[in-house]
Amino acid sequence: MSTIINPDFSDLNNPDTILNHFEELRQEFEHWKQDSDINIFSPLKTANKTIEEANKEPDPEYLYPTLLIENEFTILFADTGIGKTVFATQIGNYIAERGRNVLLLDLELSKKQFEKRYKDENGKLYKFSDNFFRIDFERLKEVPKDISYLDFFIKSLTKRIDDGNISVVILDNLTKLSAGSTDNAKDTIPVIEALNKLKFEKDLTILALEHNKKVTPNKPIELNDLQGSKMKSNLCDSVFTIGRHSTDKYLRYIKQVKVRSAELICDTENVLKCEILSENGFLHLKEIGYGSEWDFIKEPTENNKSDLIMQVKELSQSGHSQRQISKDLGISLGAVNKYLKK
Image (cartoon, rainbow, N blue to C red; front, side, top):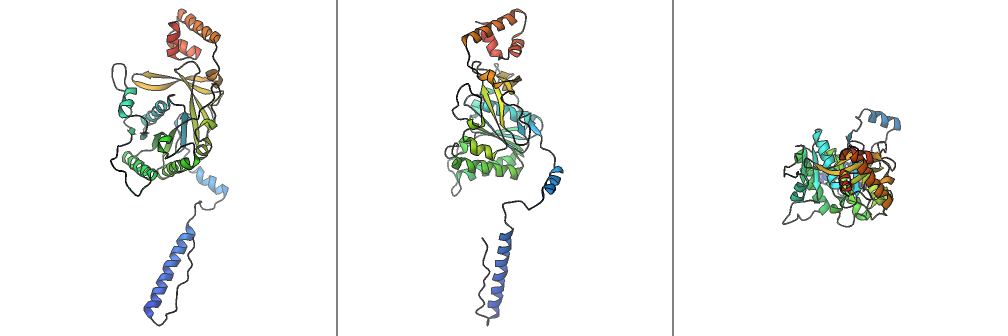
């Protein structure tokens, strides 16, 4: 708001009064000048100047193949129990192994629940990268007064980012941050805007996990299936999801539903197929190729299942290993083992 510069010079007989009025005038002018420079937009420049400046900046790189680009805000959404946290942890460790400091903000699992996921059948713990950090909620006896929950959350997160010189933050999950429903724009906007502000201030890459809406079975996953989809998708750069196989409980697929600065590779006809399994104490999604989403969601029939079991047994009898059968038929190792026992 502009300030009206209108000092009172009615008492001109007193020199001190005149000097005081001039000082007030100077201060008012400085305030007006500062207000006039405030603007939510960047300085005006031509399109040519814009791309010339951008051309001098380094191109952002993929921090995780296809799915996560440096300095972007990305959302991963999926149904409960499908492996969001497992895959997010896998992504975080992958990035940390390549030299970046990564922070997993785990608002879902306790330390013990996290530990149980990462040890083998003999009790040996998996060794994560030393660049991979994890935090969860502290139980506070008293929450500070005169500060909103969201402001206190961002302030606390900023402190941990500074403590570890963090460049990548994985947030599990957005629902835990909202005072109300994250399907409501009123509750969603402040959370994502605060995280985006922090992203720019600290030069971060953010991966946020979120739930999906209740979806129709045997239907391809779409952006509209993201809880609070319209508002969240407008405020982030990229969105991808995880789906499950209609009959094989170990199979998953990864699909991109929004990209802003790269090619959309994993679409309905080219989803990334994965098997969820634990190897050497590391629970993860193991990539097993690409395929159509329709093959994952189609309604199973007894004839199809019988034919598949027969194929598994025939390949086994011809000398194929279970892992070879899994790869050839596009089914999980667990399913192969189960079918061979029938």
